[in-house]
Length: 461
Image (cartoon, rainbow, N blue to C red; front, side, top):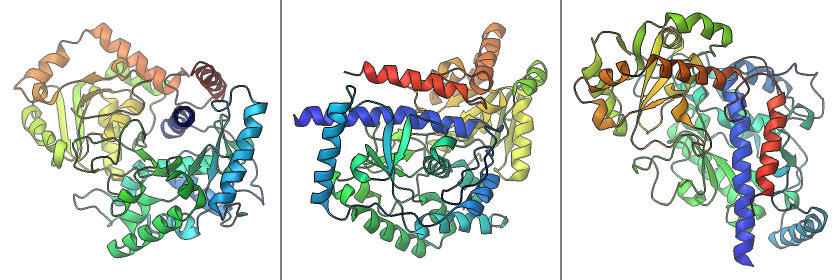
């Protein structure tokens, strides 16, 4: 019986992963308005779904957000156990598809403002501080934007249900009704914008708050979702929450960023970076594709740590080659414009590993209509078990990539018909509403995806 209960629990989590990833892909890759927002409700958070710029959306969000909600947190583990038993018994006899039925029910913790709204205000109030750079010269606020999936997810979960993007996941306000629990702590913002000791103190406070919750004690955190989308975030205390479902940029199986046993595909979820460049829509692609005169383009930091050391080798191998543009640069405003221009002029965009196996420029290339050339031996892509990246990208091993002349010879040998096919697939990814790869403005694919997940749920056993 215990094994069957674990299987059912894993089924719910598995299905939630599908739903979660697709709702976020809609947010992160759609750079055109999604829906005209209604007037803000005085009793709800209002989420500006029509705005997909992080900064503009955050302005609207904070202008309409309330920082206090009714607290439905259970105070006693035994009482919560009893309430869960009654709730699951009722669902078992009323729903023939329980526990894999839809919608999935998510309880969003009402954490104190210092873990949520105060950190969003900290970002907003310091956004113009352009001197705030990381040790390698990258603009801190731009880096936070690339890892802002925690904001987009939370904003969607707490929006009025009528304004939500995905109807297959609903927010519940009683813990005994929840399949999963979401922890809305902005771990990346706190890491980059707070003093080191202040940040560590806040992490310890958040850890105590989270692990004091009866629902956490009841499951050991196994049904809790925690966003740690930057590999440095929450690092000082995350060994205490390793049972939770982590939202990550990659697995980094090299061991440079996560300790053994902390992250693995059976438990955690890889979610994409937010693109740093604007979407090249259908009109843009029709204008730029015939004029892509650069064979291979890269703009970014050439000196990186860990697996990213291959960048300097690639730079030395490719710099000065005919049809190749290699530029050193960061993701600041000027860097964004330069990267966007270069990607829209190029057939292929180099996407080597960064400090971790993943890199934000993969998603910049996708929304630019530039075929990514992925050089990262340890990379786990967001939902690659569902999404066939081979239709839109070229994968090269690190050993082959640095052989003198090998990479350019390989790219020049790709048939024009195959290049055109990948370009068409990139256009579908960003503009044509396929269920597998859908990042556009129209609402109807959500209905298609709901149907897809329902069928998946019904065939799971």
